[in-house]
Amino acid sequence: MLTMNIEPDLFSPYEMGRTKLRNRLVMSPMGRRRAHESGTPSELMAEYYGQRASAGLVITESTHPALHGKGQPGSPHLFSEADKRSWAKVVSAVHDAGGTVFVQLMHSGSAGHHSVNGGRQPLAPSPVRPRETTKVDGEVVEYPVPREMAVEDIRRVIAEYTASAALAIDAGFDGVELHVGNGFLPQQFLASGSNRRTDEFGGSPRNRCRFVLDLVRALSGTIGAERVGFKISPGFSVNQVEEIDALETYTHLLRHPDMAGLAYCHTSAFSDAAMLGWIADNWRGTWIHNVGINPTVSAQAVRDKLLAALNRGADLVSVGRVFIANPDLVERLEHDWPLAIPEESSFYGGGAAGYTDYPASRHLIAK
Ligand SMILES: Cc1cc2nc3c(=O)[nH]c(=O)nc-3n(C[C@H](O)[C@H](O)[C@H](O)COP(=O)(O)O)c2cc1C
Image (cartoon, rainbow, N blue to C red; front, side):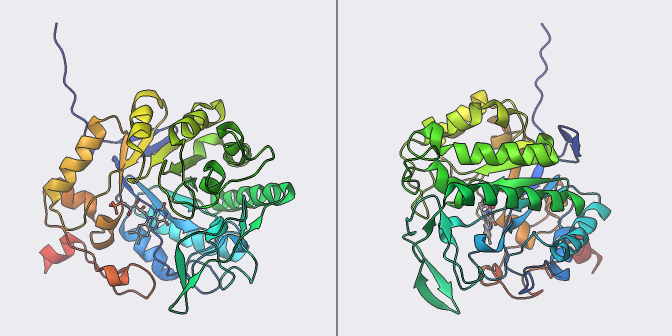
């Protein structure tokens, strides 16, 4: 019998539901803290994302659906008409270059801070203060103890997410990515360490999944399930989200019929290995895996790592830091061109330096 051995190919197109992606490489969300003080995205952000539009899918940095969900200065908002108008310029920059772009929606929950969130006590499933510290005006400070969300707070926050998602679609985004990882509000609900509630939103894995499932249903009802993706980092403990039963909790979540029709499941590099195995065997929708790549390696090494993830069953692979200094990463990987190394001191905050001034290879070759 003739058998065909089809190698997964990073550079072939992929149909994610009705969204056609031109290759399998995804730009992973990265907060670069260059929004205006008002929270509206800056012109520089449009230039930055436009430069990286040759990725099959660009996912923006974490963006707040409400001011009380903010934890750091410089991170962008998406809850006003002004935010929408500025995001529309980012979207145009990516679309004009032939790309596809989702916005990542993120509520910090207990990792919020009154210095940037309108002076309010942060909201969380339970009054559990993150063990980590944060910085305010360059000074290291502790997080405040958050306020336990009443059921009305939960309903209001879900309504804020859906209003933000509707604005995202009006701004032209191809979809939204719900940030359910890295210890922020949705993961704080999933994890027993940060969720000590005794009502229907706490206790068993089933109850701890309720917030995320209610949120997903509301978002799907507003913008359509095929335009909602989500990112998870099962087992990644930060902000007191200790997950002692990650496999049980996330299998309950991902088996739920309301998750099945979503645009994609995006797994972080810091995910529990058993859970990744479960996803490889059981998740029937699009799976984006964030491999985790040291940005000092060669194009060949990056390609090998990405192909290995495709071989393990991922449909798409996401890359973070390597994209920072290599706006034309797709072309560099295709042609085996050298990779530039990003400067870490300009990851967060600042202007064009270390943000939009990394040149594309063609520009270097033309010189
Ligand atoms: C500067 C920076 C900002 C990040 N911000 C976000 C974020 O806003 N949302 C998110 O889901 N992950 C964020 N991450 C994590 C990345 O998306 C990615 O998962 C991580 O960097 C590992 O992938 P890499 O090794 O390819 O960089 C950030 C990472 C970096 C380096």
